Length: 94
Image (cartoon, rainbow, N blue to C red; front, side, top):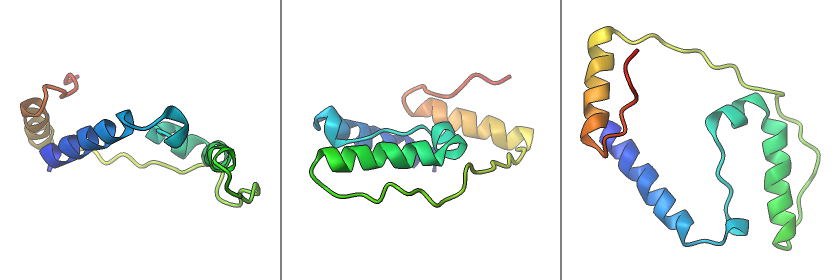
């Protein structure tokens, strides 16, 4: 599963690289969960800049709570090893 996620992300990044910056918007998870209204505005700005229409009124939640689920140490180690096999991007264990 980790390899699939990594390969999918790499494919998305390759596709974005071929687009002009004004035609795509990359969003980090923290930015999305902390301030979805700001992201909504950014999306709207891009759509309007390309000639589309957009309702500027955001009616969603102000943020999204994230609940972290602790992993068993053996599972966390296996996940890190799996990520390391794909492009060596596994984060350092604490």
